[in-house]
Image (cartoon, rainbow, N blue to C red; front, side, top):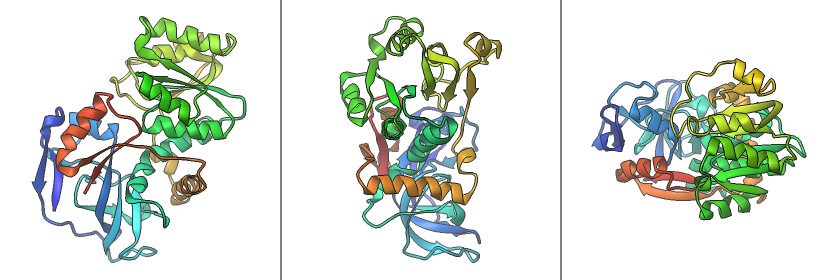
Length: 327
């Protein structure tokens, strides 16, 4: 099979397409013919060495496709089933091995591309607004990267729960997308001379001086201080990514000074700790897609051989919605 391998820690140039032996499933695994693989920031963190990995390794952890082989202990899954997943290392490949307990059934009528676009970013958006902070009607929230893959989905889901989304984006085109998804107010951060000072001032102006109940920050180093200053007393700063780099260590006294603010660093694994929770979230997402209340934007697709270009586009913030590799 063809697969994309990170040969060493580094930039997108370390990604190479190689031929590897077809995998054999362990007893608890299925082998899936990959139709589309999701491209996510966590892939870039692992490729770069920010998240330690062994090298060389096949990149990617998310995708969708059709089951072609089953391990001896697998039940409840059949060869030919259409499935998606979020947690199978080595998904940038023609064949991926996935634990059967991690497989998500894909309903009829959902394309392979949409099925690959929903698991990681859709589940992330879902737990952010329903569990990390259980949004209620009338809540004000700040959402960075509102035109990104998680951002567009989280904006829609937060709006469905009656929250008001203040989004940040980089360009007028991304502002339009964020507003189409339901953002009430959008701030173009590149037009601010001093993000740390000006963004919280704009947020407080939009919230009658109070600040937001929750700030959702996937950017990290560049936005953390502005996010913290935008949260109301006893609100929550949700740091769920680091596209600009990791946040330096934080003195807990800063949370006290900000008004007894909560700080959390959630992960998808903690919010899909059981199969029931995993399927509960994806069932709701697919139902919302089916009745038209949620849409998944495929912002860019690349063939498997161009995985390095996909990483460059994602890290360069030149994408909107979901980025996929297609096979």
